[in-house]
Each structure stands twice: as C-alpha cells, then as structure tokens.
Image (cartoon, rainbow, N blue to C red):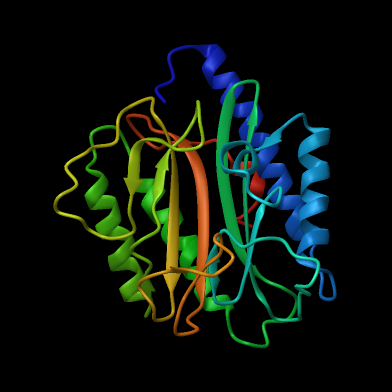
Length: 254
C-alpha cells in the first residue's frame, strides 16, 4: 500500500510494533522440550493482549496463530502438540497480524540453545543479507536488482536461495502489490520499489536446495533433500534514502 497520511503511518507503526514484539517474546520464550503448539499459543496470547489478530488465520484459515517451521521446514509450519523442540533445532517463527485495518509481516530464524548442528552461520548469513538488501532499497530501485543482490550475497557466503518463496507488498491486507520480491535476479521483473510504499522483504537462504515443496498437510513447505533454510523478514516503508524499518521491535538484528 502507499502511505498517504500520518494516520496510515501511525496505524502501520502500531501493528508492526505488535508483530515485532510478539516475535521477539516468542523467541525468548522458546526452549527445548516445548511443543510448537505451546509456543504458538503463547504468541497468540501476546497478539490478543496487544489487540492484534492473526493474519494467516484471518486470510487463509491457517490452523495456528503463527507459522513455526523447524529444521528442513522452510515456511508455513503448522504448530503441533506432537512437535517437541530439541536442543540445537533451527527454528523459524513468522508472525503476521492485523490491527485497526493495517497489516504487517515479519519473521526470523534462530538456533534453539547451543548450536550443536552448526546452523548459526546460516542464520547469520540470512540476517546480514537482509540488512544489506534493505540498505539498498529506495524509491526507483528495480526489485530484480535487490533479488540479484540477495542471491549474490548468499553465494559469497557459500549458500543458495529458495526461488519459489518471495517477499511482497503489505499494509491494507497480507499480500499486495508488488506480489513478488524474489531472492534472485529475475530479468523479466521490471517493477521498481515506489517511494512511500509498504513492503515485506524476506531472505530465504539455503544450504543446498533452491525450491520448497508442500507437504501432505497442505500447509508446510520443506526441502526435499533435507537442506536447512534460514529466513528473516522485515516490513518497511520505502523512502528516497534508507527505508523505515517498521518491525524493528522484533530484535532480529541483536
């Protein structure tokens, strides 16, 4: 959505703070031995206390307040009372919500406890690549060039990108124009970032795989070869210079 008033900006800041706070507190609450359903319910209680409503539930009827993906699950993982978090798991939490007619989306991957499986370099790469990508986004920049930058930075770090999951516009609904902000260079994508527009930019950085495949539950996306993927995401406002990072409260830069 384009921001056309102070009311728009204030509304977006409120919902972005809500999802950022929810993500941060969920990460701090997560511990080995906990089920992903327990973690999700905790996140749902935070959103409710802040007056926010789960975006995937509202939009798609998703069976959880948040998406929690573990290890080779890439995105849209269903919180489960049977999925018990283990030490060293690679965990991704994706929080998106609505408040007062405004929507925001953010996410982050982290290693649970001690990094016994050596996932931290992947997590660090995903985080840093997102930081680098955001620093280059401003009005008039081609979306394809940012995708190319993400892919190039991933290769430099010894990783690859997931090509069938993308960032997107957000603001008045969960998914808006531009509908695709990919993690690779797409020469056919001629669209440019527009000043004052609101977008959710994501990095899906992979150890090997380049595609995510839907599992039989109809929601969860995972790699077929067991590759691990770290994702980080911020909702931003595009400006003429550095973007305004609306979801900074999620603490993924820490």
